[in-house]
Image (cartoon, rainbow, N blue to C red; front, side):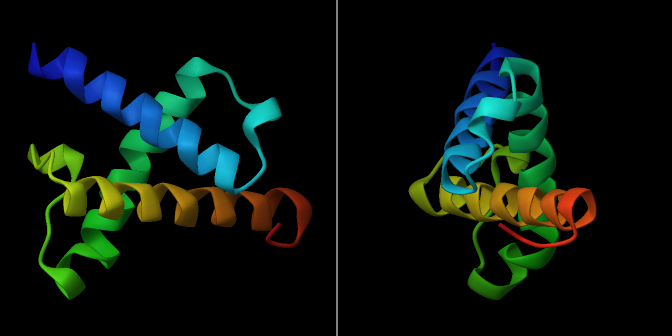
Length: 89
């Protein structure tokens, strides 16, 4: 059951991040899930030590944990846009 919740929350976080970065039309459901989960990993490495909150990958489904995962997903999409277009959008 945790796997299903992890995938759903990862998909929602990836979708919200793609809406923020205006890449929603280019992504499907699978890519949203991947962006949410990989973004949570990036957020866990970069932001989590700064504010002391976990991520969805660490089974922290608190508001701070969701925010860290969302910021990590936005960072991931910014990096992808930088390599794809040569600029962050």
